[in-house]
Amino acid sequence: MNMNVSAQLAILRKRMSDTRDVYEFAIGAGGQGLLVKCFGFVPDPGTLASLRRSFIDAGSLPAGSEVFNVFVGTQDDLRALLSEEMVSAPGRNVYADDGIRMIFSYEHALFSVYHAATAETFIWLCRDDRFEEKYITHPFVTELSWWAQRHGMLLLHGASVGVDGAGVVISGLSGSGKSTLSMSALLYDMDFVSDDYLLLSKRSGDVMSHHIFSSGYLTESTLRLLPEYEPHVIYKSEARNKYVINLESFDKYLVSDLHIKAIVVPHIANVSEPSIAKTKSGQGLVNLIASSSAQNKEVRNASFFLTFMQMVKALPVYDMQLSADVRQNAKYLRQWISQFQS
Image (cartoon, rainbow, N blue to C red; front, top):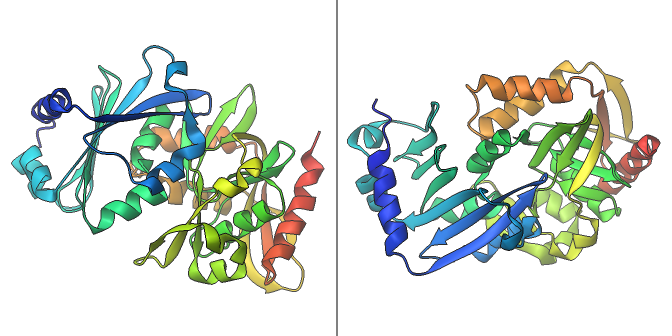
């Protein structure tokens, strides 16, 4: 397949020049920043809520910062934009070479390409039933994963909480209790980076987690266990039976960074008392990298796996047996993390 996207970029650049109304905002995370330009539309309030705490003053961005150029249209508009080969290609297609990195699918109504020569990412959003869910829960997750890697970070599918700057990454597959544990921890006044996605870096020997999305994610059953979050629901995913929580009211507990001391792998055991015990690192790390690479469309990206192992290989891994009492679990985790405070 011919991956020359000059025609597509030319069409989008003309649309940029023809659009008078441009909504801009800047994002900062992990010491890096980027400018987001939305051509001809204002993002959904839920999208802005999910990124709110990462907002920075656009004037503080250094010269040469990367730019996300974002467009909206119909699936028919997308068909007109893509080449015939791209339209007919089944599934989600990921491509990278020295000049571009791209994901596209007419079937799934998506097209994004990073253009290395200009440090720009072009993102096409299709307005359909999938649009709202994708860009409220985790806006631009694939494109932010690319951006993170270019700046020495990884976007991982995991939670991160802590106490007084010392924290853990909580790793678990769907249904393991990861989000419930981290969202419960927030109610116990713990430092909170994320419940579902985080940025990870290693700097001067320290592994760090960094905040990126300003929202939480709970199932219907766990929302019943944590009713404090019910007034803050901003969206329900009917397909996944999950609720997106606006965490603005909990802002004083949201932190930009944590020094990571360990990886915790929770298991729903319904024991009378929660417990944490050191374990071999293999399965916990496999779960974390497998779910992250799959959700970020990095499955065939060898450098993603290598960078991950270099970051986390020295971190101890612990299994946490969860009791039926979600608040008891959070209280226990808080006490346990306190051992890492300097």
